[in-house]
Length: 197
Image (cartoon, rainbow, N blue to C red):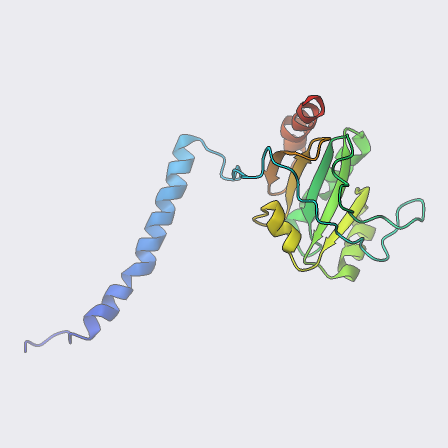
């Protein structure tokens, strides 16, 4: 046998190239999206045009509105009200949720549509503190303690925002935090479109 690398060491050396190959593949995908001018946050949803999930979600216990009354949860059938509803999936531990919160407050104050929240895998006390400190833009907050509702909604990660028509059909989905620009150029036009469908 010739001097040099033992036969058993060759497969181990080959494994060193696996992370490099994975990185190269990932870089190629990002480059492809970048050169095509695609929006990496525009992840298609199979639920667009389908009925929104109808499972009831309990209220965030102890959360009260400005009138001192408890903020309701999301009972079954809540999204088939005849009016457009914007559903925002959020959590107190989510930094981008904190970033988009002023935008949600501005949207709720504008009265274009009812805004409801789904509190995802959160500690109730932390969620109450989050909304108490930053303000509560939601007309209702349903608790998704185990993440089951998020799966039904096809959520990839928080925050995500859905436009739901008055008939309970999902019309649009926004992945990631809303910016002021996205509010004006995406969310408001999609709400207006859903109102006439």
